[in-house]
Image (cartoon, rainbow, N blue to C red; front, side):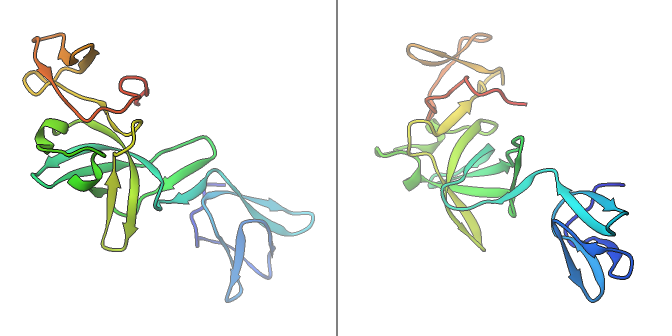
Length: 186
């Protein structure tokens, strides 16, 4: 059988009884989660074995994203869902805002010195509301985890003095995560 989606028709009540991860609606048995349907023909039960638990985004959730736009008072970030072994993040909106007040515990004079378009960011959800998601990077493990040179777009290497491009020699600054360069992306 193919993978079923939540709400997908599996069988009728005349054919099978509802099993694990299923529900009955108007005589139909439907999947309540994504997974592989299985039929127990001996006991006439249909079930769905979940492949991953779906985890909704909420305040405190860790997200990864790409900087798409940097303004004077906020950064627009395209979020990427986390796919862990047993669970998958559900992200309703694909974009979130990082307001300047949530960037650092210290005063931020210029957001354009802290983030550049294309940077990969690790952030925490500050607020998840129906009209949008606000992020924060004001903890040491949050911030830019991979940055690219604004001149030649090569990855920047962490040095004693900050970030340096080994290709063109350009030096740059960012609001760095303490995990810069340690997280495997892919």
